[in-house]
Image (tube, rainbow, N blue to C red; front, side, top):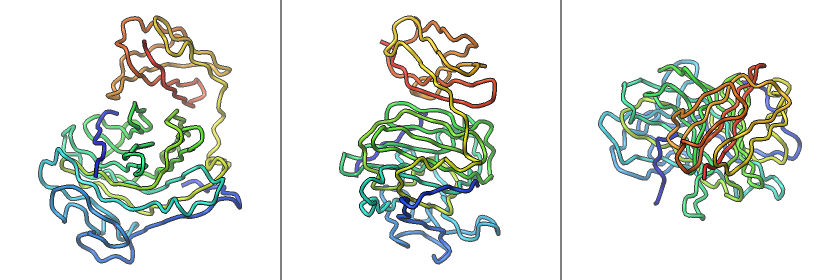
Length: 303
């Protein structure tokens, strides 16, 4: 199988009657030890079978899916499961995944990684989203095949975080929230089918996953009262840009950060007219932080 290995970059859900559950897994019925093919999971890649296992990380979560590589693993190992997206009702074009994520031990190396990846298998393993922790940088990021965005800063080792993300197949829009933080919007690639959920393991990591749920809906899954973040009407132009990127919003901008495809900040400013003349040609993410604490992000092409 061809997959992409990239290191670049609980609120109540208000589902309507048109939402449907496709798959969930809390690992409680599994046998402790190697995950192997329990519950319909399958393995792809090298390494040892005990690198992906069922374990009791803590008493609160009971049995969970935990990674346990003890050697360098630069090529990546995947354990994957079908999302059962083929069972989605016509018109339910928004994919929703929600799960608990344990960061595991921080080895101090930047090559350690534990990501959940969503794939369109029939499109040559095109990837609408990848979510995980970079222990070397200390943040959780959201990425696709083009770029990425930081969604949670100052992430700590051996800590559980709750992650909720959605992908709108029609527009390509990805929304994501960590714990009780802001809902962050990312402009992704439309028309991909979220057929498979993969756990990517690389380097040395003891990260874990639990309480995975996959659903399909036709409405914004972040419409619960506790999820609502007032979103401004923002314009980032011109796009593509040559010399200057302008930001126009009905909310007051506190700061703007521009990230390259590797997830590194290349420019930070409080200005809303940003000189990008010296940036190399390519794709960038413009992350806008408002005075009220909310954030938005969008892709910009530098030509």
